[in-house]
Amino acid sequence: SAVISQKPSRDICQRGTSLTIQCQVDSQVTMMFWYRQQPGQSLTLIATANQGSEATYESGFVIDKFPISRPNLTFSTLTVSNMSPEDSSIYLCSVQEGTGELFFGEGSRLTVL
Amino acid sequence: AQSVTQPDIHITVSEGASLELRCNYSYGATPYLFWYVQSPGQGLQLLLKYFSGDTLVQGIKGFEAEFKRSQSSFNLRKPSVHWSDAAEYFCAVGRELDDYKLSFGAGTTVTVRA
Image (cartoon, rainbow over all chains, first blue to last red):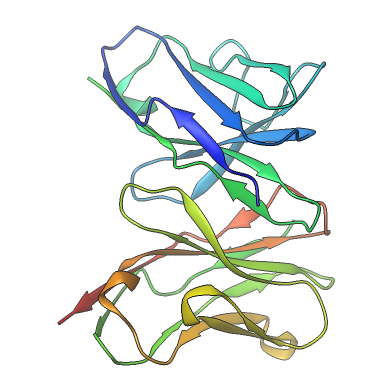
């Protein structure tokens, strides 16, 4: 299975600032996904990041708030822009292997004050 | 659209006792079902999956799950719980083999007491 590394693992940020989360995979993957896990809740898909094309966002998520880059087949970034306390969550990067299951990074725990 | 219900928000079990976590799904066709575990401060780890075939699926860490189409359920079980099994468990359902848009349940938190 793919090994997925995320940075930072956690951060505390001030309201109104932006934070970029990095996701590195140890193998080339076509599709990478970003999920959000708000406190005490389940996972929600933010967007799908394909190399060489614009990210595809799910309902309720917009590019201005969550810009995504996918410069190559092993790396992606998610930026949380103009943060507010409501953005305090765990952000998870994931990839799908050929057998169908999703594999996840350890997540980036963001606290916005 | 598919959906997943995990009726139990929190379960407390004694070490060495058996554990069963419930998962019910809603989907018209044959679903692709997964159980993930999230230990404190960690990402999600896949425990097991069901795509087709034998309805009793074996996973890692001594877990198993049984797919029951008649009950739309995919309950997770472990015969003897270890303290390290304290974590949050998520059931998820997909529509197709390559459907990355999994629907996750709300999760069940398992506490293990000595």
